Length: 284
Image 1 (cartoon, rainbow, N blue to C red):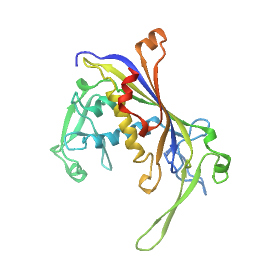
Image 2 (cartoon, helix red, strand yellow):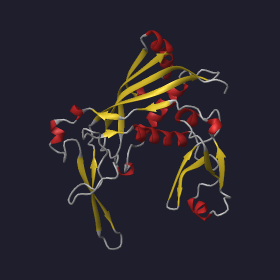
Image 3 (cartoon, rainbow, N blue to C red):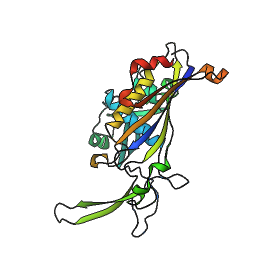
Image 4 (cartoon, rainbow, N blue to C red):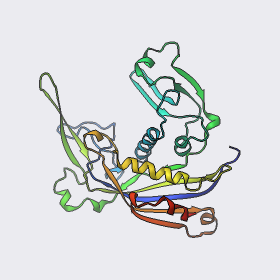
């Protein structure tokens, strides 16, 4: 890559509708006696929201699997402590769709030559780890994900009658000991099904000698389709976090938009499945 020129920005805005309850934990909050021991994250007004980091992290994880990037030699350890190993994909392939879309962490990283944690925990001579420098491979991320804020009137009065706080429900859960049958109850706070959030995703379009065109816009749409078929937040395998994207608006803001105020070209879709990839080229 000999040049990197920003040629425009795709702005993808939509509403995220919860089809089942959503829990994205806040962490670091004290437990009150008789209170909720697993609260959701809230903004300064006390309303729940979806952090952009939660959206982007989940989307990246899904695309790493989708593009077949979860394999030894293609995974780095971003956290490697005795009781906690966090692994993700980073590589120096100039054509890697995942790294080019979501970005690479600069500096050096431990590239894992095995995905088996037990081998890494016993590794004393570094035979399963290769330290590699990625600084020369870094480019700016193409994807920006905004925090998604609650549409307050999506929490209807009828819904509030069945909620435990103005915006959330308290879901009681039990873990049962298989031997003694003893219950270990806890209460988890969830944003209820039916709540909606305004979301925005920005895809930077670059010219690196070859124009991106709509290549990475299509990557965004693919990642969001995967997210709809998966889950957001915690406890997804137990029914939490199913979402749907509605009222989609995609516009392309070229350099002329910023220099001369030229109106951006816009396309609108009811939902993801109605997006016609062939129509996206009309934005350019």
